[in-house]
Length: 242
View: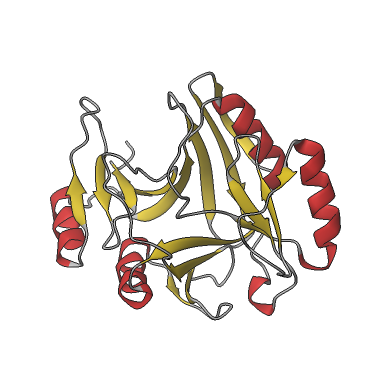
């Protein structure tokens, strides 16, 4: 199984998806009123699809996963380009920091990062910070789930694709516990894809053995299964292709 998607809930998938496709230099996969998908590949590294499914209303819960974009020495130019695409400056209490906090066209905060050695060869997304109640525990969970390995980061528990290229998955100490799924679903989550021959029930059992749990949302008959990691962050496991 492998990490396939970064999923962002969207009231207007085409508007939000087109913003992020331009921001990341993605290759379009789907452009429809109810879902937009774009692909970002890192040479000799991972390929991740960024998916924007439609939801009926804007998310209201605190954001537990966000994008840190690669800025490096061209940080100010990256910021200006994103502002031109429709982003805006926001204050989320960050104080005096070397990175720049912006919001996208649906008010999802993200960061444009300064130069850091850990961000060499990440591609346009430097990192995906994910809130965690226990970063060491959750790093072991996500390493098993994705096949990504421990890496040098910026003082956080960090995973990276085995190629040593592509974005960092950073496990950040959470400012507050995750709310219940029924009332505080994350606006962003990660999707895993089974390979041919993988046993979906064995994967579900492995998730539970490592502190996660299966969720059973009332969304009708879905081809994928919904889980939460040990800190309550939602994820989906998609069936094998073919």
